[in-house]
Image (cartoon, rainbow, N blue to C red; front, side, top):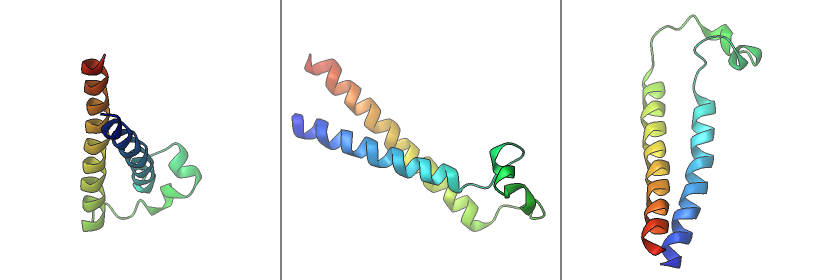
Length: 81
């Protein structure tokens, strides 16, 4: 059971880092920190491209993996005690 717990912890850390990177890759939707780094200048393109939609899908998939790792770790803690 320890190998599964270690594997889920590694999956949680790796997916968390990837999820953070993917969220930072998204285009800014308005004011805030995205404008400070020049994200507000590219507001001329109103439609979402295929790359943006794929980035959205990949972000959701990694988020689901991250959530599943959390639920798995909690289930192990709940039934291991």
